[in-house]
Image 1 (cartoon, rainbow, N blue to C red):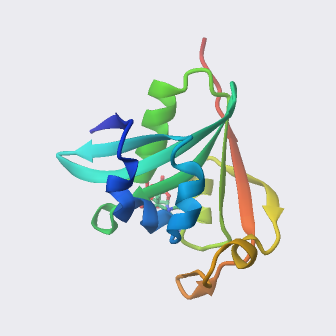
Image 2 (image 1 turned 45 degrees about the vertical axis):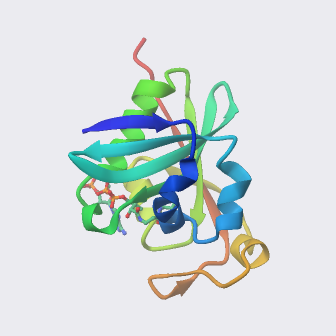
Length: 151
Ligand SMILES: CC(C)(COP(=O)(O)OP(=O)(O)OC[C@H]1O[C@@H](n2cnc3c(N)ncnc32)[C@H](O)[C@@H]1OP(=O)(O)O)[C@@H](O)C(=O)NCCC(=O)NCCS
């Protein structure tokens, strides 16, 4: 398993990006000023997009694993691989996600804890309603994870 950073033509992987963020205009807001990495394990497995907030804090803007490779540990491994290898000074990772049974438990399993919420974010910022597992997404839930570095 290995990761590869993509510097140009990030939207060649729009199919992956749209798995995690259904509206292209929302992706356009962060894709150019964020880092993108692909995960390979023989095949292309998934991708992650990370935005620097400051020296110590980074935000996961988009994380997607192809459907056929989900629930095999790749999502969790991708987060760990990227932050262990590319963001050695990072002490805090944040991520915003819908109040969804498909994503919140995943991030909690990865060690993230809820710390904030933006009411009606999805209703106010997306052109059409977003449903996940039959649930209408309304609020943006923010989670954070502190990384302990063994120096
Ligand atoms: C969300 C997503 C990235 C998770 O990646 P994944 O590779 O399927 O997840 P993993 O197999 O690494 O799961 C890690 C842990 O979370 C748990 N988990 C994952 N999804 C879960 C769910 N819906 N409910 C409960 N637990 C879940 C796994 O059981 C595993 O637990 P373990 O560490 O105890 O074994 C992936 O499903 C995906 O790409 N979904 C579509 C795009 C998306 O919604 N992206 C997130 C928005 S930014």
